[in-house]
Image (cartoon, rainbow, N blue to C red; front, side):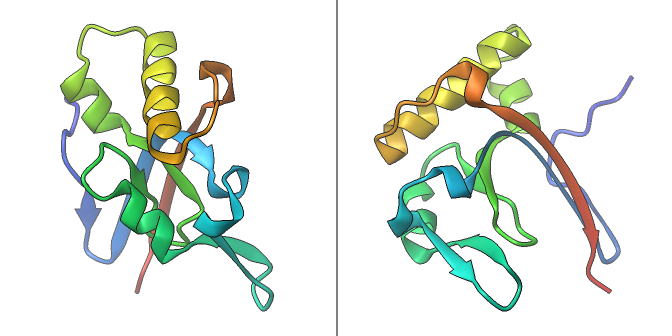
Length: 115
C-alpha cells in the first residue's frame, strides 16, 4: 500500500486529514463566528499562534485545528494511534494553554471542490 506523504491536490479539489479538535473548543480570541453562514472560523490570532508549530488549520472553512496525518506518520512512524492522539493533545495544549486529553482528539477527513 502506498501512503502519500504530502499535501494532496487534484485539479480544483483539495483534502485535509488530521487528528485534532473543532476550533469551537478553543478560547474566544482564537475563533470568530459568521452569522451569515452560521459557523465558526479561525481568527488571525489562531493562525499566528500555530505559525512555526506542527499544527495546521483546515483550508476550506478553518473549523478544525490539529496535526495532519501525513506529518504524524512522518515524525512518529513507530507510534500507535492512541499515542498519536496524546501527541496532538500535548501540542494543542502547549500552543493554546489548554488541558485537552487524548480522548478529546478526533480524526477529521475532509475534501472539497473549489471549481
